[in-house]
Length: 221
Image 1 (cartoon, rainbow, N blue to C red):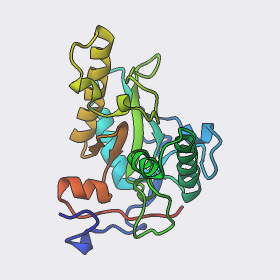
Image 2: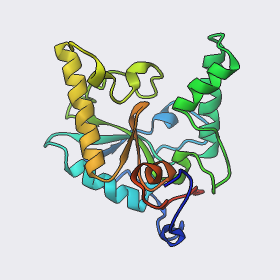
Image 3: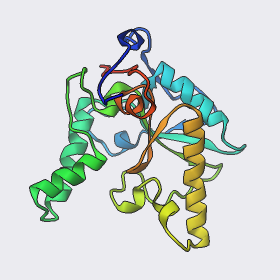
Image 4: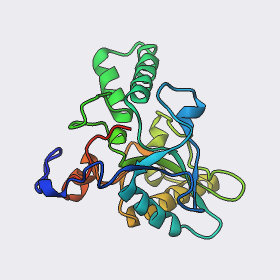
């Protein structure tokens, strides 16, 4: 199905049918760490929110983790103000590298969507169906090879899958990413090739990957 189409418009869920809900107390296997709030970005909140249907999928994914592990939610639904602040920050960083405008646009498109208030053509996080997350044990977050929002090639989902002769630590990183990907995909999400931490459900990216109809467009809060 071409990206951005919906072969069955009746499958679209309204805001009332599938509202945004807080992730703070939905499961003991899910912890909230509102990353952008801790960075003091405009429009961010001290909580993370997703569509109700997405949260239900996320709970199922968390339950697939081995005992002693839990999902840590870094970001979910994202306001226009926060999206704009992220876009501007990443663009400024790329411009400081003396890249051409063409190269800047090429690179920025890999990591952050263009901010928009148009709920019919939303960025993934504006739908409430995109989530950024990692895994933690009882002591700390698992090693995934890069920090969240790392914009190097090591952040690519399969970077360690493609590398030959991994060290023992790199094998651990690869296995940690595999675990996150497995539980999320078994939970109904689709992965993002450029970012190991990003998964989608119900939005345009998910629909394009799975061949299903789009469930979620943009939602205001």
